[in-house]
Image 1 (cartoon, rainbow, N blue to C red):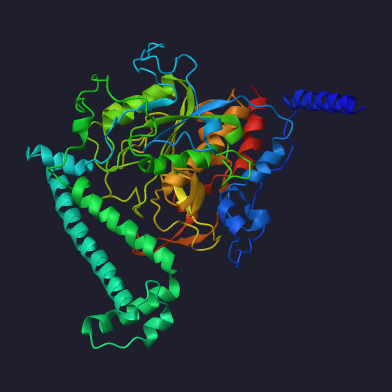
Image 2: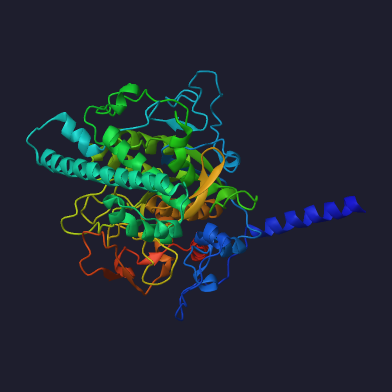
Length: 540
């Protein structure tokens, strides 16, 4: 009898699955028909870890309605697709990513041969265009390093280099001062983890300590000790790296790679170690991959947007510093040639000496029906301000006319549905940003089997790429261009005036209607996107 029950259950499941291939979605799209009451209570731990998957109408949290989207997909079948993560490397051995890592079916692991003839030996899970390199100069430092050629580009790069190195030295001095004062308080009070009360009760004749005592009381009133320690450690590492590598004209990070980065035809370089030489150096790419594809419902960490339907192809091309145009262009071409249908690129810069190589790669991807999703950047800038200059990569060369219709540029939102909706670090732009997605405190995989909250448009981009992958897996007949416009057109329209960052050089008024911050004026919504995709696919 038990065997018979199992048999009937399996048969019923197959029957339902078969029906699912032709079942149309009849649900109504989510729309804001009455004012949303912003969530006043703090997010629970679970909500904070999954807020980008939650729903604005049901939860008062401006996520992408991913959980609701999966309700629509019950009984429907999907085709597994490849998503390429072009980034700093991916920890493909993380237990929440290992099941979804792409394996090249045409390559024999470890035989030292280029079995598939694509020019890359043993590229089992992707390719590492950086080889053993990790740190790198910023692009304007590389331009300055080449010497004064009298060009306007050199003058602009030199002015920015001088400004940035001056500011980096000043910021490092501040951080060192704060760390030194903290250490002195620890010694004088006699406690490593002294409290606000300890500070208030502390008496000293040291004028330096008395001058900053109130500042430290305010800091520790608002910031837990552990968070303070992490912030100081991270800031010290950031500015140390800036001065030692990113802005150091004597440092040559490319020397260990062995190619000529000025020659796009010099392509035999790199290796198949997609994690990279330092596993911790793959933190950014591992987090991005997790947002897209960490396994759903396995009680490990968070849930990926499209984990059950994708394979992650890791392509390492983004160092600690600015990426080379050559690496980006070849990384895009590698992903396209090896079957990726969606590419995520959470990187960017404001100088691009060989931008045409990347433009050509974008058009190549468009010709092969591949969607590319880029992060808008974290400088709190209006990318369409008159004097802003060009942010790379992009798909319009500052002309407003797109060179191809296969690129989405994603800005980042925060989780309060009020004037603080725009992430204060996010770039924006009426024509240079397409749509917004969650990007503040996103919980996902990090190297060495860990999970962390990270934030940036780097996190918003894979959230959107995950929705795009979901559509392409369930509706493979839709083109990259159609999926791009579905994400823009089906999003949640937001009729709010939002605060711009006080750090923004383009925001003297400090507020702006959210609908003016991107082409669509919307937030990506997986539920609505699937409904629109279903209707469009049914017409084919």
